[in-house]
Image (cartoon, rainbow, N blue to C red):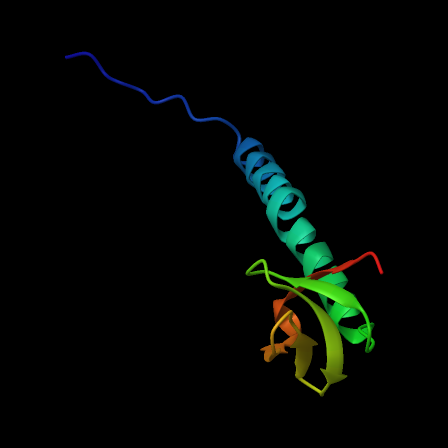
Amino acid sequence: MLAQTASTGSPWTSLVFLALLIGMFYFLLIRPQRVRAKQQRELAAALEVGDKVQTYGGVHGVVVGLDDDSVVIGLEEGRMRISRRAIAGKLEK
């Protein structure tokens, strides 16, 4: 019979590979998401009446009222109350 031996590497090699994998996961996925979330929170906190905004759904309007958790935006015909988190960005005045 031929004895089959599995060549095993050093356990340190596996740990280094795992650490590199976790580091790549953090820098490619987790960190950018945290940066985007922080920017969105800052945008929602800095809203003022009169700002032209766009929602994530693509609706454009002007901020006519603010509440703790919601924003009232004026549209061409009427108004709409939306969550502050639904604001994608400010447009030029």
